[in-house]
Each structure stands twice: as structure tokens, then as C-alpha cells.
Length: 379
Image (cartoon, rainbow, N blue to C red; front, side, top):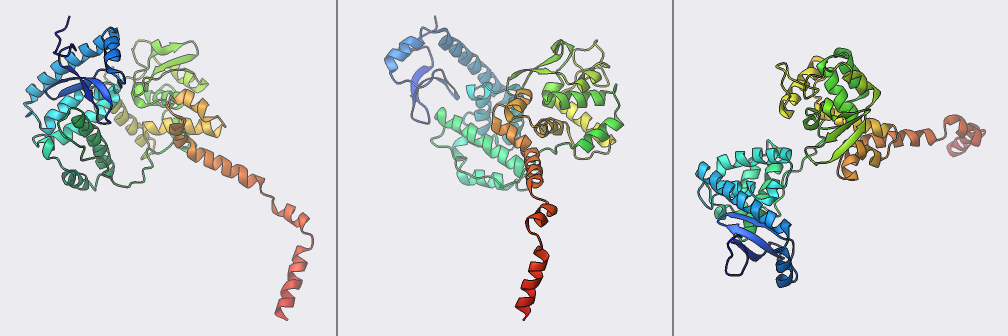
């Protein structure tokens, strides 16, 4: 049985108010903090009930493990308590961070680690609004990176408020750069044909394109696919970013490409050394295959957008497209299919307009009437 504090709660657990003023149970020791419950409205009754549940004790054990890992990490890095570096290390062991997908964690770490290398020794309490504005403003040549950093600073400083390291979040309300992001270029049908002409059936590049184009998945999911994911005419995908489980019927073109794939490897796609690709390594390699086909500026992710565009062109609903791409919301699917929908609707609208012969039938002798009106005005 875990040791108890004076209030009868497990060691390091107390009743606390979050930054929204809601009452919750919180685990806290030093800089490490984690909430163990949802919002409490009837403290005594709900706390007594929580202490009898397996879910609460599992959350408590996870917090203890997070505390140990955070303490060892901070010691290994020799981060000064109360510094930006110590805060970021503590954030890495928080439920807010640990609940993210592995791909998202890696992205966040890359951004925050770079920030810590530059500002890790600074005390968090001295990080004021004007300092953050200056840091973000100094990244004007990289507006997307600046906006991503600002977004993560809001999260980390919210966490700092939660553990009562600072009273308010200085990054809240700050605006980043206004950018018009078109994202990755969508492959056109001409682009797809050019790639197929350069990379015939049986090549690794053609197999890679078929896997992405006919499953509509991200590169990080495609590089993990292998024969073990094939069940008859379907292929099973467990999306790394969202955790979404999908079963997708394989298109005839994908079946043709897979017919040439060996069954001796754990993944369909392997490097020249026979090892599975990392997502980043695959992205670089595939970009080289695009370059060799004369397709500059195209990438693997553009094929995911092309898959959604093809499905939209064929008249599929956003729900049908979502069932293949695995997007969490229909709004995300609509971002991919907006151009295709606009073009198709515009085509239908133009086709509905009457042509010249229709107008001439509806207005007989219109030319003569206009000539007579013009001559009267001249007189």
C-alpha cells in the first residue's frame, strides 16, 4: 500500500485547481506534475470512489514512473531547477506529452530541444511577453517554424502554470506570422504518368508510389507495411499519428505492384542495404526518385493528397474518402479535396449554361433589332 499524506491521499497527491479554476486531484513533486482525475464536483464522495478504482492507481503508478524518469533526465542534463531546460524536460514526462503519438512526440522534441539549446539556461519566471515576441520576430525568414515554436511555447507555458512555476502564460494571445501555406503539392495525372513511365512495375519506386497512391496513407505508415498486414484482398493499416485502425480494399494497380514484391522481408519497402526505411529516410529517397523522373518539387505526401483528389474527382463523399485516408474530421478531408470539388462544380456549372445557339433560338432577329436601336440613337 502506498504511503499516505496527511489528507489521507497517496504520497505527492493533493486536491488542486487547474488553470481554469476546476478542482482535480494532482500528483506533484518538485517540477513534475500530473493530474490524476477529471473535474471534481463533490470532492469527498468522488475522491473516496476514485481511490477504489484500478484506473486511479494505474495513473498514480504512471506518475511515479514519470517522476523517476524526469528526475534522472534533469540530472543527466544538469538542467538548473526553474530553468527553461528543466521545464521542457519535465513537460516531456507529463500526461500532456506522453499521451501524444510517437510521431508527434518526435516533432515536438525537435522544436523544443532546439529552443532549449538556445534559451535553456534562462529562468522561466523571467521569460516575459516581450522576450517571446523578440524570439518569434527574429525568425521572420522562417515564418512556419516561428509559428510552430509559438504554438509549442503556449503548451509548455500552460504546463508551467499548471505546476505553479509561473502565475500566467506570457505566450497566450501572441500572434505569429500570417502565411499563406499551400502545403505539399498535389500530384496531377500527368505527374503520375511521368513517374510510372520512369519507374516501371517491379521497381522499388513504383511499388512505393502504388502503396501511397492506392492506400492514401502517410509515409510513416507506408514504410511499416508488409505481407503480415495483407488479408486476402484487404490491407490493414494502424496509423501512427492518429492511432486509427483501417482496413482498405486493395486496388488492382496495387495488387499488380505487390505481385513483384518479395515475401522475405518484414516490410514491402527496404533500403539498398536490406533494412526498413525510416520515415525521413524514405522521404529523402523518394524525392530522389521524383527528381529522376523530372518531377521537381513533388514529394511522398503529395501522393496522399492525390489519392484524396482522385476519390473526390470520382464523386465520392467526404465520408467515403475519410474511410480510406483515416482523417479524424471531415474538415481535414475537405482541405484535401477542395480544389477537386471546385473544379468539378465549376465544370458542371459551365455545362449548365445555355450555348449560343440556344440564345439565338430564344431571341430571333436579335441582331436586326439591335441595329435598328443603334441607328435611332445616332439620329
